Length: 312
Ligand code: DON
Image (cartoon, rainbow, N blue to C red):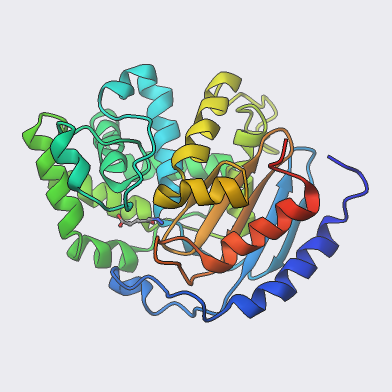
């Protein structure tokens, strides 16, 4: 990393400038429990592979990870299933909305990638087969990665999504009709909604994804063995998928503006990986029409302009 970079000063500048972005998007309301979140919040954390962490604004306020959890479930599935998982899900951008159902019909119930809802449901189906209690297995992995024992899902948010998950349920049944869903859709949806309702702060999220910037090494302060969470090769592949599919039908726009592997969520979070350098988490609840945080994307754009990250 360029030693002359003053990350705290840069974060303060970005924080100031993002205030002008409030009011340009809308908080997600298709999950009723998310509709009541205060829209005018912004937090950002940069955690570097050499051990620095810098935060600004609401970086210590927990928020709903939503689709950002798809990154972690995909990584878990890759660890336990390896390349066999590609029989069940593709690795191409969909060019369609995150909750679109149309491609499933013409593509035999095999979702385009693990980050659109249909693909994430298949991944959760795979993990539901593997783990008797997936919710706790996932929390365990997140707690290890974040070096943070106090991570939970928000049960109110999980129930709220579960009661209104009609479209996700329809996709699960459709995939089951093609033999690409092995468990009961109801059981997988229970797991999926709890997974999506996991809460973290920006500071915790940046820490939890640092392994993707560090060739798969978890860089744990509490685990001196520092065992790799993923191989360097797997980490590189996850980053490739985040770059091409992590922002759904805005993946091209994100690559153009930011040029980093990212994962977004309708809670307003975005995590960006700077391979070899840092993980960056940003959160602001107002979304654009594609379900990605308006101020979050703006902040990341400012960050890469100032640092040159993402332009190598
Ligand atoms: O399944 C859903 O619709 C939500 N639990 C997650 C969607 C999401 O976060 C899309 N990301 N921008």
